Image (cartoon, rainbow, N blue to C red):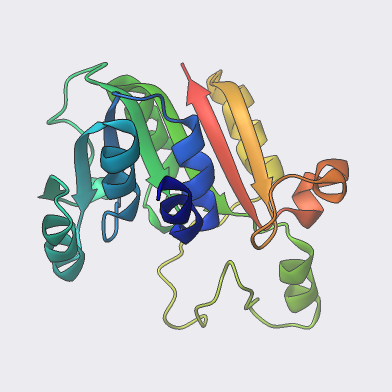
Amino acid sequence: MIAATVSALRPDLAVISDWIAPKSRVLDLGCGDGALLAHLQKTREVGGYGLEIDSANVVRCIDSGVNVIQADVDAGLRGFESDSFDYVVMTQTLQALQRPDQVVGEMLRVGKTAIVTFPNFGHWRVRLGLLAGRMPNTPALPEEWYDTPNIHLCTVADFDDLCRERRWTVLKRSLLHHERRDDGVIRLSPNLFAENALYMLQR
């Protein structure tokens, strides 16, 4: 039953679920419909909260039994005490924030560990789109230029540089292409072949 639940998760969420220790306290920023937290509650006895701005998703979280607070991640995490969670997670939201660097810094204040995922703007499909003189449209970046929420796209190399500049320790990194996890080709040139990047960080 658990295996079926894991297989139903989005690929990056399945990786994250493997990274979360049982009975942890988790804060999920931009939690969407609460799929990750609902899964962790059922399979790992995790407690915690989701933050979500979209009203329809808030209702879905409640229907799934997920504790959710309707809030804008861009407004910050001032309402949460330092080290009040074991993990603070933010999936596919980094690129839509006004100041993603500041939010990751807040994640590392509020949580002992931060987990961040984002689409890699250095992926070869993105580069081909730009070479053709078009804004890229890929499986990881499916929206058209006029309706995308993304305002601060970055590459794997950019995020690696940010981690070095801020002295954030990268505990784990997983790079995905569609539904495949790290393989030899991705590891050979992650900035070119990774479609989505997942990082586990500590201060």
